[in-house]
Amino acid sequence: REVKADAPATAAQGFGNVVHVLADEVASSRTPADLDVLMERLDSVWNGLAFDAPWKSEQEKDQARAALERFLKWHVLDRGGRTPTASEHDFDVTLEAGEYAVRIRGSMDRVEEDAEGRAYVVDFKTGKGAPTKDEVATHPQLAVYQLAVREGAVDEVFDGRRPEPGGAELVQLRQPAPKKEGGDAFPKVQAQEPLAGEWVSDLLATAAGKVLDERFTPTTGTHCSHCTFRASCSAQPEGRQVVD
Image (tube, rainbow, N blue to C red; front, side, top):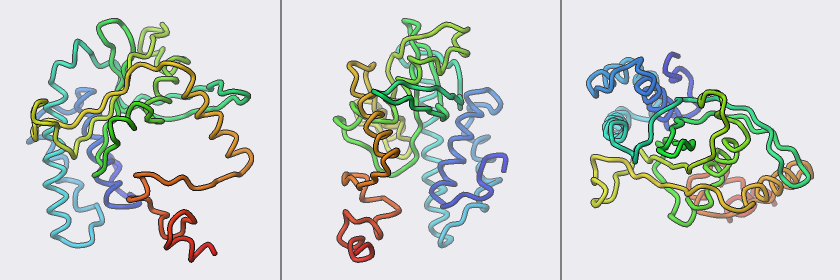
């Protein structure tokens, strides 16, 4: 329970929960940035994750070790003068989106302050897929984090002042960085520039309108390959048979 691995919906979610909690413990100095210590913590809860077979458990544990190694390399890296200000930071803000007021509640894996005093949001990913470079530029989750920063989501960890959003990034702990950025020892980092324009607000307004009108038309994309509802989705051949 301490590392949120007591009852995950899937083994993959349990994997992600454990890695996220250990990353938080390191960021908050509750656990040293030492791989042996982290692996001891991992060992203490690993058998609680429901894998289909012993070989799968061992395979995923090797992946977890690699993810933690990459996290530690990233953690001690000089990231352009950025310094951590919060880890697993909960927020609750209301954003103006067209004619709607949209309440957003969530948690940021890590918040850092850059050399210019801006807030930079980091989101750790433990999945096997990653968005393309173009998709990162308009990644909704990162963009909403930045918009939330603009509306006061991190004021309390910046001594009450309202920082400007300085960007956000996905840190892909399961995936190695390109060779020119360190290769297998480091995680793949996908950065989104500081927000420009009103496209995020427009995106939220569209989403809010669909929810209020109960219009849930499926939208296809790269996410379809790992979607839990593919077999019952009207946008997929196998799902159409169920819906029709």
